[in-house]
Image (cartoon, rainbow, N blue to C red; front, top):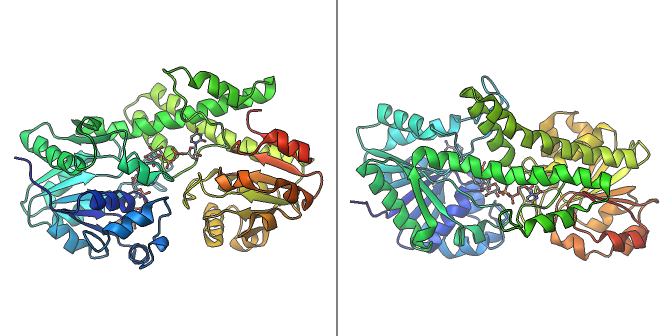
Length: 465
Ligand code: NAD
Ligand code: UGA
């Protein structure tokens, strides 16, 4: 018999744990949802009386949190208590690329997952369903199960895999109307009951035919596969954008032409300065590492090429700026419009802007940055993390602005790194007047009207045109 869930705990109050649990609480008023994290500042921000100050910026999220918080949605640092009372525990902690030891730079670092498993085992005095929400290498559930069974208090655990497919910037929309919910579990009767318990949670708002159930390993691997396929489309179109630049073909026209083939489809065919975000690169590297660890060299090489192409695209954008500005940017002001890895998010993890800026700073450019949602502290933090130069040097060369017009004043070139909608509405004539001439514009997201800006006087470079 599937257990009816009345109390959920989620470990990890980040970009996934926060929004997913807020929506579960919103849609299931009968379930108490407690989101816990070790990071006290983050929890305090989730509890900020003004929901506009919650730590994750997502359109519509503040409203969801306002509706459910204090009713059946709680944010807390009391991890043990929340684990102890819950019937179902989601693990939604970070699984970054390893920075040490075997698999350094490739494999997923599972130390946070293991810590969660050990903590759950230690604290639990009643049977629980453990749900892997984090993106994990295929067969991680085996390790989680082993820890729970060998270090627990003789209570029963069922492990489910329920990867998250939301994209940042559209998280609330994606959670309200997902293409599918994927739930993997054991093929035993107990495993099937656990799957049913989670199906019943999602059935509160997701049509049953959109809830897919599989075995554990298929579910774990499907998440890495989905991200690999999506990133592969971006690298494929970016590879062709370079060919367009040499042949007179226009990448937007090529995308439109192939996207109308229903077998290919129109989405994820926007050429860009390269994909960013916390997951595409990490998950593909992880996939490559797993394939290599099974001795599947060709499989590994095939997927690694997606990353190689993306690195090339980011590098060639920066190089194009230097080359076009007469082979030197030393001492020149280059204005960056956008720092986030995509629009409608304040997330900058693996943002292409970081790598393009680093490239230009190596050439001693003065980088000025405007992003509507990213703070100066975050921008400098992202650059300092690379350790390409000392912090004082970064602070000297990088200036941030809270106004795009000021940011572009006196600049030799503008580089558009994020596709924020507001960039389309600017008074480009005014921006042009205040720039150093010739005024260059490098559009890394194909957002501005090249013809119009060229008429104003800009020297415009757009990807793939
Ligand atoms: P995040 O870094 O924003 O959040 C993770 C949180 O877990 C942090 O706040 C951290 O303090 C907390 N944490 C770590 N160990 C803990 C512990 N032992 N106890 C309590 N809290 C702990 O990460 P995220 O972006 O939310 O990603 C989480 C997982 O979801 C990753 O595996 C990621 O691949 C996956 N994912 C992310 C996205 C996305 O859009 N960001 C989408 C789908 C899947
Ligand atoms: C991606 C996936 O889309 C989600 O399904 C998945 O859950 C998530 O990763 C994850 O596992 O973390 P996200 O990274 O938030 O979501 O955003 P995307 O919309 O996928 O964009 C990723 C990057 O690709 C961005 O830098 C974006 O600008 C770039 N991109 C996307 C392009 O350059 N061209 C496109 O056509 C589409």
